[in-house]
Picture 1: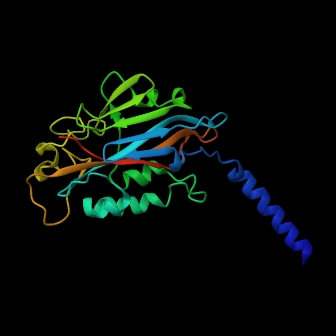
Picture 2: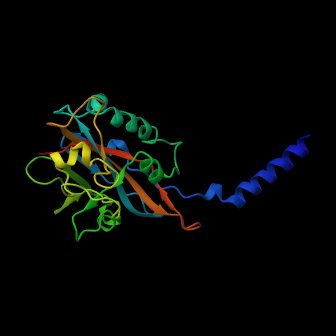
Picture 3: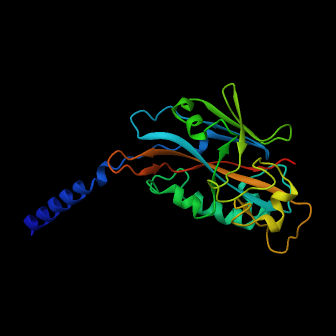
Length: 246
């Protein structure tokens, strides 16, 4: 009996070793504790400096805009349902991945796109994948959604204006690609797969009028599996749910 068990164990070891499961690469996430949030319009992400020897290529930021009839001076998890029930529902899905030691190696691109999240972009002449490359290790990324200027991202002495996605040309954001709260952004007629595909309708019963918009943003580390050449992801960290300025 013992001999049979040993043989079975040896065979399983050979099978799993041949599949490469024990060598599957993992990219460290940005811990949620490295993110600080201030009121409803500012956040900072302290990027670790421990990606040496990993298959890291860049960081990616996923976002979605939620329409609401509720203004919030300070946004926290307890306010998500009041802002927009879909925001609370989406966050409950992502929360199981944040700082998880078991939900690793998940295809976070599929998870986020499955909830209609889009990839953040930067104003032309700035490729966000290049900006969020290894050059940001050990730095502090600051996000500013205050009303003094279009929402931006600061790294060191460099400022970058944040741009909404256009899905690679699959949809045409209105009134433009800036993260600003305007009627053309939240008007129900414009929330569709061909116009504002990055926007979620408000709760049932809310009609067009004076509304507010919030952008939920998550950051993940991205890399390439050298064996399979497939894209791999770390678990996410929530940057913030920003209220968009008028």
